[in-house]
Length: 58
Image (cartoon, rainbow, N blue to C red; front, side, top):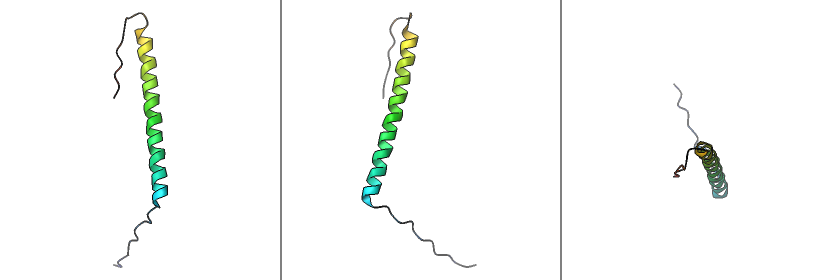
C-alpha cells in the first residue's frame, strides 16, 4: 500500500473566521426571534377568551 500524505486544510484568515462567526450569531438571533414571535402569536391566540397566559423565555 502506498502511504498518502494528508494535507491539513488551509486555515482561513482571522478576519474571515470572525465574519463567519458574526454571520452565524446573526442567523441564530434571527431564528430565536422567529421562534419567540411565533410563540407570542400562539400565546395570544390561546389567550383569547381564556384569560391570561404566561410566556417564558430562555
